[in-house]
Image (cartoon, rainbow, N blue to C red; front, side, top):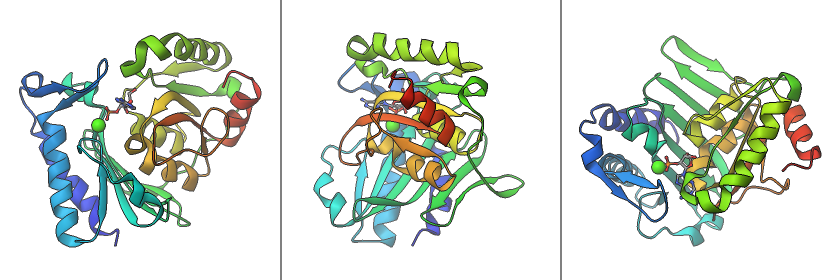
Length: 262
Ligand code: 2AM
Ligand code: CA
């Protein structure tokens, strides 16, 4: 059932790589810095069409869809798709964005794949079978690091679309991590942030509010890579609505939680 997905994502990414005149393809959604381009829509349409052709009964939830069948999450096999995660990077030609495809069964993520076409890295995981990255020189297993917080590299997202509400409290936590780790990073794609945690480059990541398409695939990739992903208060992430995300290796996730900052 999953085998065709990586190939489909590589095909869809050609639409991203062919992008030109992106600034003129922007349409802004509700909220600050919440952009969608004609390319987001084209990648999503391509994935809907191709998945629908192979699995006519598949339920698909996509960031750019007008009306998502969230009710189906608990009962059906669902695809949760972010056609371009890191849209602001994409608009600026920062070349750090990804396609994210998660599959849920009975409300649990059972497969996830995140493809960064600029680096040609395709991260994927199937529940119970570990996490891997397909690189130009072969497929490698990935694992979270074992660094503790003082030796950690920390990453965070700024929730720019809720900057009035979440800006200050986000940067307070980022400042705390800056003081208590080796350094901090902000890459602009939550799906890729989760993959950098899964592959052990980054040790702890947080963002105040993300949507299921940002983290569905990455959450399984982290768990299968031996990491932990929860909301700030330690409760399970929600696939049917936005939530906070705290993800890391076990020691860093535990230290962050015990600090009282999250
Ligand atoms: P996007 O690029 O697909 O929009 C940036 O901080 C991260 O937050 C990106 O992964 C971005 O995904 C995501 N994001 C953007 N708008 C969002 C919104 N309204 N709600 C939740 N997450 C969002
Ligand atoms: Ca997106």
